[in-house]
Image (cartoon, rainbow over all chains, first blue to last red; front, side):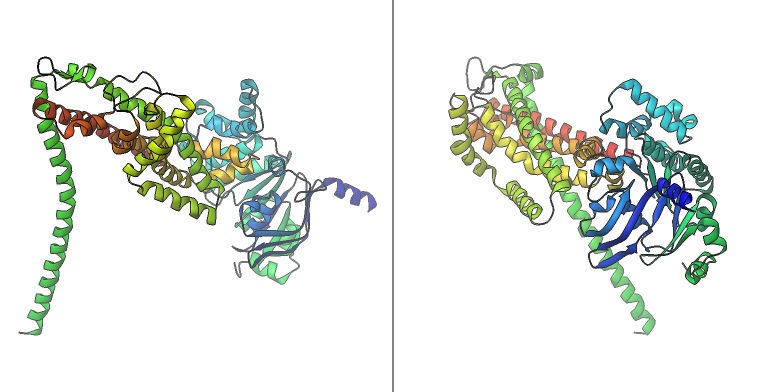
Length: 259
Length: 301
């Protein structure tokens, strides 16, 4: 038991303690205390507007952009308090994010991928070339775009654009990847490709994904947390959450009785 | 009258009223089109006859301007064309960086009271009559140029500084709109990769707003080339080829306004011809703006 416990602590990637988030008068997240472990896919499910995406944005401090947002409590990344002891640009380099709607920049495929390394100071052409190829291969997009690296990224299909956005995140060599409903704007085939990709990526990265799609959470995640009105109702192994939920509300939600 | 007839009558009356409104609106639209057509027609009608006496080549590429000489009149406006562009481009060199910085500040950095104050000041700047700018130019700018750079103070540089201030509202307003039109997703994507705010502005937002910013600059050029009174008051107005920033200069607009009061005959015609040249330049700039904004819309699709 003691050994298991230390292993668990070694694998701990992110921890929140009594995290509260306010948007002005709205109490959007209430006392969230959870652990997220490395090389696993952690999924957040729950109805719209229950705080899943807001929670994701507290982890890479994208909520800093919302002037009325106020965070209380602590978020630890590798044991370091990200709101007190971390440079926000360094944090976002380590904890990448993929958005709901694919948002490639209006530039070429190549420049999209090279953007991150460039802002972090890499200028050598050969190093950039290597990063671009490696990232596109890791995002399983290389074969589709290798002959049009210098064409506008906005000319790609929606699914390709989203994989490009994933490749763009990989190019800055992150540690954790946050995904905010990454397949909600995509067709089923593109969705399947992204899901396969997530499965591959978890070998090297820690993945936290928000999804509307419960089947998706069941398919790809190791751990699932069920959010409801700013609170985590239940969090546990994905099998357990879907097969033997402990809370009545979780059961009602996953069996489709509301949401 | 039966009920049915009354009903039909009401429908007829309504139809008549509707079509009358449409016709009035159409008429108003036609008036503005006609204004442009008439202006074009009469400027050309009064200006083109000069070419019966002077060749187009001589008019555009000679610097010999002495229209009142009986024996050997000269109608070359090259100095004024060069003067107009010289003054305009120096004005852009000063005005574009300041205007663009101001637009970025308004669109990306500031909010609330500061933005409100800045915006109303810029609006005010756009509303000040150009003759007032001219006074300011004489009292402050010419004097400043004289003190800091020497010469008379009535020169290219003074005119350019005045124009730079005058084109600020155009550049600030249109560039701000262009910057604000850039999807917020781009900024979020850039910040989420660990880029700083300024990196996101300079490497993603500004390139995405490029067409709108260029359009604002081209419209600024139009305003600067067409400006008359303010530059007249500070530019020195000598009909010579400008030789440097401190040289006296005469622009196309100044050439028209200076001689307008007393010119007659071919001299008068030559002023209209100068107007034709100015008009053509402005038309070209407008086409350019349209082409740029069309390209923008196309690329967004």
